[in-house]
Image 1 (cartoon, rainbow, N blue to C red):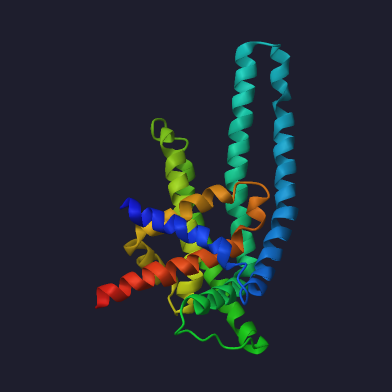
Image 2: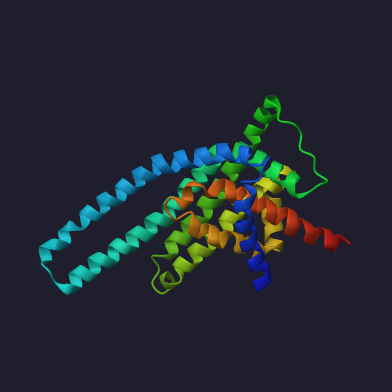
Length: 255
């Protein structure tokens, strides 16, 4: 994996921030943004309350007194719990919000592509045509969810295998970066008619750029407040990555 390819993916995510505020695009980012805020503010709050309950369950350690070792173990457990909560909450809530916003994410990707590619002329918004895209968009999200679950089971189990559990968190983080790339690049690629297997094949051929896009995104979704606005930025950034790099690379190869 070349560093230039990885950095190209990182730059595309950063480019998504400027694109969502562009005239003619920002109104299409509003609904995904609103859905994301509602999901993180409601479901996310419930998960945070569960974390507080878990912290209270550690009170049994107090019966051992003020031993330094006990205090250290309690602190470590709290930090681990906080990190796991941030990772799991970020992943689950992003998947949920993306599922609910998927039809609007596809529309946003279409408008961003038209902005970046002069040869693309987006059709005017028609409610019947938009409603017709909803079943396909939801099915695509279910397909990605199934893929996520099937891979998460063995990755989670790795954390309980002595020796391997040392590197298991790094495997989990790498898979999350890959999953986020699939999640958001599916929108611009899906608009071209690509199915789930074609999306994975395309990203496999551009793995460095995909991981460069997904790695910082994995961190951003775990940061409170920042994760409230990440979905439309990720959709716009993924579309920029497709139009300006992946699509261009394929065109150069064809020539």
